[in-house]
Length: 475
Image 1 (spheres, rainbow, N blue to C red):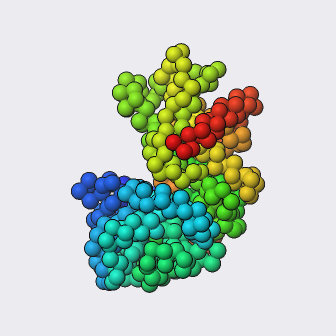
Image 2 (cartoon, helix red, strand yellow):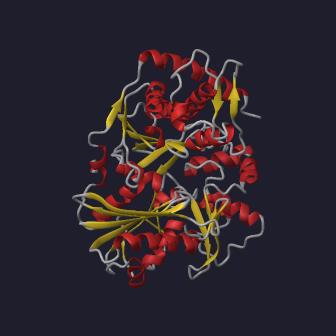
Image 3 (cartoon, rainbow, N blue to C red):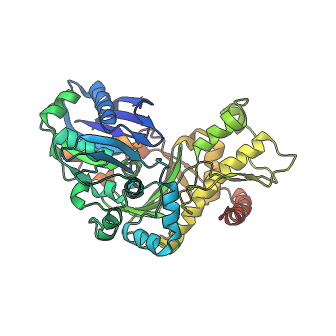
């Protein structure tokens, strides 16, 4: 059985052809052009066209039995009543609403009400606040449809305006308890549910239209699975779509995602809680991870040392500096998109490698802060699966196990979200009845165990990190 996964991510279009017996058989990707992708705003139709182009490259003329869509979790497009774009698509990294979000967070009552209803704090991440900001600056929403990029793609392929619970929970408009549009959140922005699309799940497929079939070079009428978020699909591909399993991803940014039986909304509001593909997910995202690594090598060090040279230093020094990884603002646990980062506790004896090791630790400390919240709320996960660029560094991967103090399984799947979409496509075609049972890419995954002596030392550095984090909370 051949299926096609199409993904419109933050910065590139991807397509993956998947065989139920052989796995990935073809893949294409292409970055978006600066002409239609800049500062967190993208061209809605341009992204769709680029994604279809990738799909045609891998699937044209093939006997594809189903198509599934993946997209960035947080996006909203501006379209007219006929679903023709009349503005940009605004993504999670559209930073213009930053001051607006800061003001809303300062209103403790309003921020708390939005959070307890939707699982989403006031933050630039969420389309709810991109729209509110645009309305405050003159946008008239009357007569407009407001799809996500994935919802737009689904409409263009099938003619149906449907958004999955998963995507819409990431918009900030879905009530995480009832799984219906939340009246308080929609009234806050001034939108109507009809403008946001009919709600559905991965089971609500629609047939591929003649136009969609021509764009992709495949047969019309085959089922198309509506779009799900890249992070949620990662859970499926990493064998973590089972309650109690967690993924820990460290790539350009970082995230922890735990599959749960219910929404998890702590009093401190340090984490998010969404509906995933088939169950709830609770977790956290951090803005600074491998992008901080790139900054250190390319800007701070001026390219004078390679990643391999930096990584070859001593693993753990006796007096390591502290790094707050907020060069790109803060998402969890503090939701401060205006927060700044940097080094502290620096001595004349510290070398570039000492600071690099502190940077690696600081990124993991930020994730561990959020992990501690999950531990308090739902207990220790049954298993943790790690993925992303961190796995390219043996020392950094071992540091992760030492800091988290638990065994971690390493899943080297560079296309996890697209593979997760392929699993949904196989389900739609009748070839994979239980989406939670996928395990192809984690069989034989390496397992890293924590080292007690290092765990103790990193715990000391973590206490110093938390002290500095708290000290700079209002800076």
